[in-house]
Image (tube, rainbow, N blue to C red; front, side, top):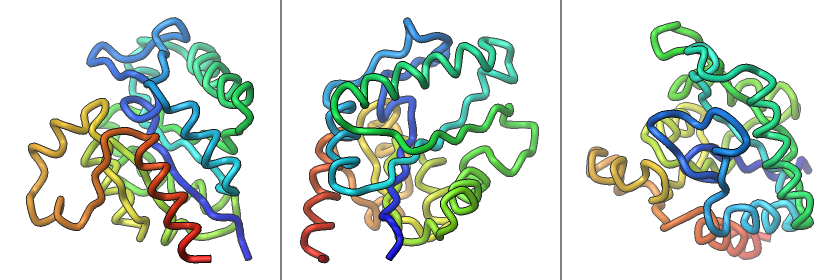
Length: 187
């Protein structure tokens, strides 16, 4: 049996988001409970993957080294809490670059499948934007919308029919508690 995958968006889910972009590790501030949530997922046997659009790279707002330092900080905080982030996948392109890795396109999820030699179909995908939801649905993931970051705006603007088929939680920690309880009930 393959490991259970869970996919997390980064900005607005794990850390505070900004319309001015998160450009360095000083601006990368975890949301309350998010580090604990990742640790809980890791300890519950999930392979934790982060899938994030980072167009600030293409816009010249930060470079690969700054992004690596932000991700190193995130991973260090999780490791100090007793968990781990298994992999981070990011799209460095602008929205009009027409790449296949920028969510809502499924390229980042295809990369996860390749790296872990397993399908993402049926995996939980937690995000705060409709792009996250659409990427999850495109690959048969189980989407969860959190109301942190842009989540409240997404909830307000999303088609009611589409939203009615998506689980919504206040934050990553409450979503995590649900996912772990669901895992326990299906074993």
